[in-house]
Length: 160
Ligand code: HEM
View 1 (spheres, rainbow, N blue to C red):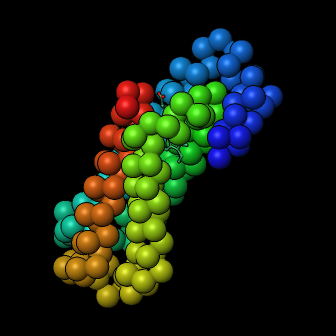
View 2: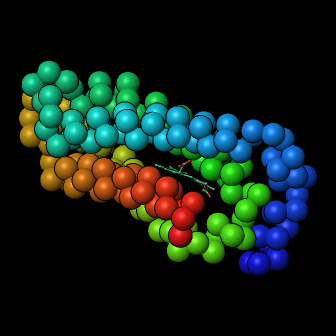
């Protein structure tokens, strides 16, 4: 593992990131914009699953407009995150918050997978002004807490 991290730190892409003035803060800024695009729409969708705006907003309409934005935000956060990881791979991988961040990302992604493969399949039964099933509400709570946790663990990466 240590060899792999050292190899990552010495690669040509890593050298380019290290050697380009202001690239790191630019990546950090784009990372934050990606997080906003991921977490904002996802949180609004989660609140709809919890019943907010039930009379006015169909679940399928919310999913159609909000989830593509969230997916794009995740891709932006993941790409910039990996690029920021490269120059300090050994140091960052050693931080106590790193396994939390990674673990919470895995939980958040598994939650999405289970929600779409199972719960969302019969969305037509609760698409309009009907109470959402318990599984959808549980998925919403897991989503809200795991993405919040990833954000907190991400910020902590700089410290511990
Ligand atoms: C998916 C792959 C991701 C990787 C590899 C990654 C990696 C990183 C790295 C290396 C840093 C810089 C740490 C430092 O300053 O030393 C960082 C910062 C951060 N990350 Fe990520 N990240 C990813 C996704 C996410 C996601 C999905 C979120 C939130 C939902 C997130 C939230 C944050 C936050 C809040 C910061 C601190 C930004 C700042 O204060 O400048 N990250 N991340």
